Image 1 (tube, rainbow, N blue to C red):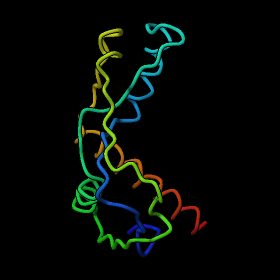
Image 2 (cartoon, helix red, strand yellow):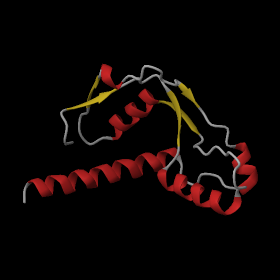
Image 3 (cartoon, rainbow, N blue to C red):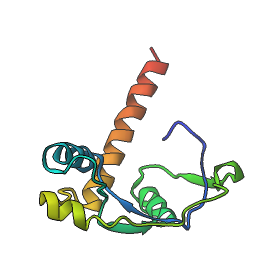
Image 4 (cartoon, rainbow, N blue to C red):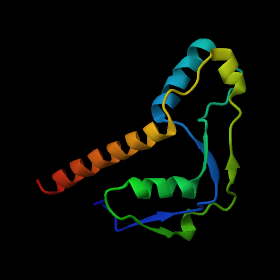
Length: 126
């Protein structure tokens, strides 16, 4: 079980690309070594998904039931509902592409969260 009874959320209709944090960090390093100083480059993932679809995938893979509820405070007054970066310039300049699939990233995220919850539960009982 998680540490919260409900997971509050904002707009689930927004569309984003997902990039694994390990890929993002590597891309920043590559940028420092292969990109031209002062130029603008976009870095992002290749999986395009609605935030709500991402949440449903996480809920299906969870080992416990996750109750979700919208929270008006989490809805942005000027939300960018479609955010997909054009990474062509970065890829041409560096040859870099993400290594981790969306599925690998989700598994990594869930494993990390599960380990953090275990640590928190252990600390509460010490």
